[in-house]
Image (cartoon, rainbow, N blue to C red; front, top):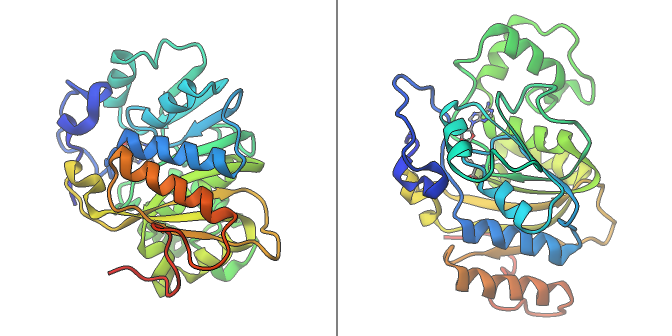
Length: 297
Ligand SMILES: C[S@@+](CC[C@H](N)C(=O)[O-])C[C@H]1O[C@@H](n2cnc3c(N)ncnc32)[C@H](O)[C@@H]1O
């Protein structure tokens, strides 16, 4: 599993101290052009960033929040577990911005960010890691507020988790815990942009996650990202960007499936145009949008 490439963190992440014996924090920072694409696509689907409260519970140097503020967001709330990020926020304009509240904390923990109260929840949570290094108290607390790791319990929350529940939670993929957290932070009718490993959408093991997602959320678009997206941070994992609204889908709702050939601004601008055209399109999809079957090489 690769580590945070501090040279690749951009201006906000430059000159960060090294972290000896650091836990694997899944640090792959999102290219700015992709962040802009996500906000533009959300706006095309109807999201309003101006005057919004925007949260990123695993914000890294805070580039998603910076983009939201540049688009007129009223409030930008972020958390990151890595204390080195506090230096990055201080070195950039973010820490001193009165619209911004950033905290070094576990973004999965209750009370760190306001629940069901954010207009947009955006970001690229850590992936390829789990909670093996988490303490029993943190796990117990998380077990009480998480449903996805315990699909056999339906909608019931655990009051007193057992040791086997805690072991199961510790091995559960952190990105899925964050997906549930994004949904918990978002207000009803709010919007979510989240980058996830593609296996979440295809692996038989995560079927319960997809069933939950498709029942609770309106999926507007799934955009497959090129393997090169996070190469600067040492991973070529297949990932995708999901654009969601926190409300149940209408019966006739259609999901746009797309593939980004590159994360350079011109390619993403062309893809955005295809997504916008696809929203009112009948017949063959415009270039960039995927027809069924829904697989990539
Ligand atoms: C994939 S990086 C993405 C950062 C930023 N959102 C972006 O897109 O550039 C994930 C970030 O999550 C942080 N992280 C890992 N575990 C966390 C946790 N439990 N709570 C908050 N942040 C966490 C890492 O330190 C890292 O900065």
